[in-house]
Length: 168
Image (cartoon, rainbow, N blue to C red):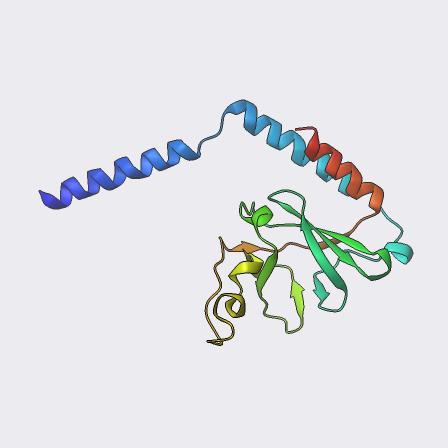
């Protein structure tokens, strides 16, 4: 009897959680329209001689930093004005709330498609909280997210994407 009550309780909790995650049809339609607009902007072909090809990986010395554009798109800024958009494999809701990527790379000194990462904040760095008394500590991170391909983009494309995101 106790097991049956537990199962029913677990099912009710799961249904309540799912109901809380549901979005309205209007919000879902708006999200799909934004994604379609961004895909349209990114579908404009660029000269590979000037901008390069879409890449599976970026080495650590190719980029200087990143910016979260929304929960699905990251802008990586490189040397000599190069920029890449990474469309994540699924939404990463913590993306805009941290400043440091903690990447679990399987490719050495580079980030590649399918590498997983978490977002952390500067103030959660182990040496900040414990320095100078202790070396070590743990990261305080969010959900695990997964990288997509690195697509070269122009500054105009980045501004168009930002305008689409601001308009909603």
